[in-house]
Image 1 (tube, rainbow, N blue to C red):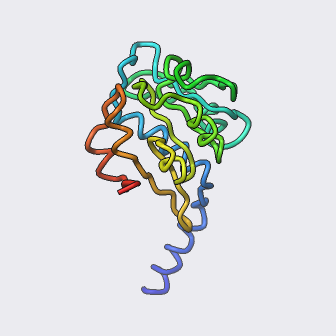
Image 2 (cartoon, rainbow, N blue to C red; image 1 turned 90 degrees about the horizontal axis):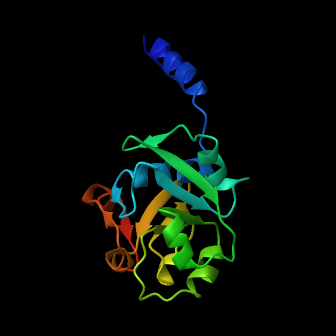
Image 3 (cartoon, rainbow, N blue to C red; image 1 turned 180 degrees about the horizontal axis):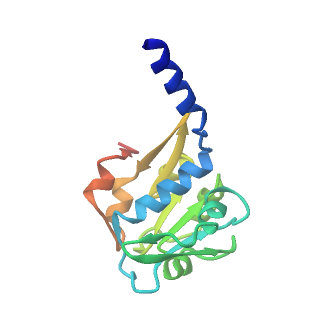
Length: 171
């Protein structure tokens, strides 16, 4: 009996494919939007902005445009690297920054201006530079970190269910 149970579990696990960090980050971004109330949210949908739609989370969400959040469609758009943060805030609900790009862009914006968008990166240093959220790879896991001080300064509301699964940085 133990032999058959072990064999069955082994056979079932063969069909499960490991997810890439980009797939996990795109799933996090999609799910995060369910737990944020954006001021500009309307019937048009939730606007995700990426600097790259050929690879990373932007490419994955771009292939799944039929997804809905709160019954609204998701809209995926590519933005240029020279787009000002204030302009991004008018065009996007969630903007994802790959690598160190987020730190470069954050250095050029007036941090006292409240924004309507959530800015997310893939590195923790983004939060040290007054970023809002980071999806950081730790070993084989992706963890959500949130800068609570930055989130509180802006024009959207992060629901407690999202905060419950996040770690906070800086403390």
